[in-house]
Amino acid sequence: MLNNINAMDRSTPLANSVALIQSSGTGKSRMVDEMAKLVFTIPFNVRLPDEPRAYPPEDYVVWEYLCKSQVKKAEDGEVRAALFFQNLFSEVAIEVERVFSGRRIASPGEFASEWRNHLTKLGGAYREELYKRVVQACKKVGLAEGPPQGSPRCSDGVRPTLDRLLAALYKFCDFRAVEDDVKVMLYFDEAHELYGGSRGHRLYDIMQSSLSWSGPGKSPVFTIFVSTQLPPSAKFLQAPITETAFDCHPGFPLGIGKWSLNQLGKLHFLA
Image (cartoon, rainbow, N blue to C red; front, side, top):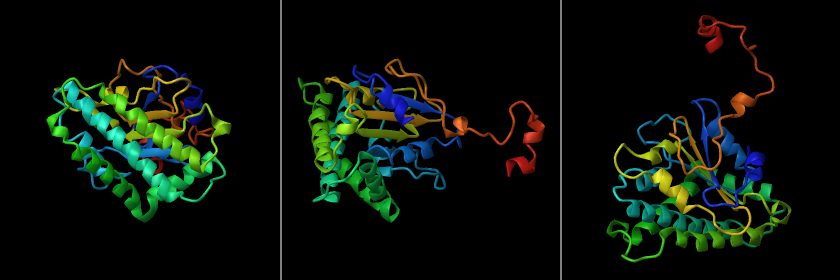
C-alpha cells in the first residue's frame, strides 16, 4: 500500500488523501499500523467511545474535539480543522525534538519505527498526552467565537507548522533517498465519525481541504481515512483502497467456489 501511495500523483490540490474501505476484521487497522513502521505516521482512532472492548482503542480527546459537536457553519468547521492541524504539527515537532534530541537516525524506516514505538509505550500514554496538548492548544484560542471577520483562509496557517515538523524530521534523519516519497502519514481510523449526522457540514470534507497540498512537487504529507462504511466524496481524487492484507494473501486456506455457505457456517470453519 505504501508503494502505491508513493506512486500516486500527489502534486495537485486535494490529491494527497485517500479512503481505505473494507469490512470489519479484514486487517485495515493492522495494515496502517504496520505501515507506521516504514513511514513517519501520526495515527488517530476517532471511534465513538461507547465500545469499551473495541480494538484499537479510540483517541478520546481527538474524538471529543473533532466529532462530538456538530459543525453548523462551514466556517466553524474550517477553523476547527485548521486549528487542529496547526497545533498538531507544532506539538508533534516539539515531541520529535524531545525524543530524538542529540541523535541521528540511520534511515527513514528506522526513524518511523522508533516514533511508532514511542507512541505505544506505557499503553499509549505518550500518545494520549501528546493529543491532549494538541487539543488544549486548540481550545486556548477560543474556537467558540469562530474565525475573525475578514480573516485569511484558515488552512493557510497549517503550512508553516507542517514546514516546522518537516524541518524537525530532516534534522534527525536523512530523507534524500526517498525525496519524492511521503514523509508524514496521517490516518483516521473509524473515519465515518467525521461525517457527522444528516444535518450540518461534514468535517470529513473540510479536513481534506485543510490538508490539501498546493506546493511544488509531490505532497510530503498524506492522509488515509479508514472505515468500514464511508460515503463517496467528490473531493477525493484518488481511487479508494479496497484491497487489504486479507484480500491479498498469496495462499488462501479455502479454495474459491469449493464450499457452500452452509459449510462455511459450521463451527469448525468459524473456529
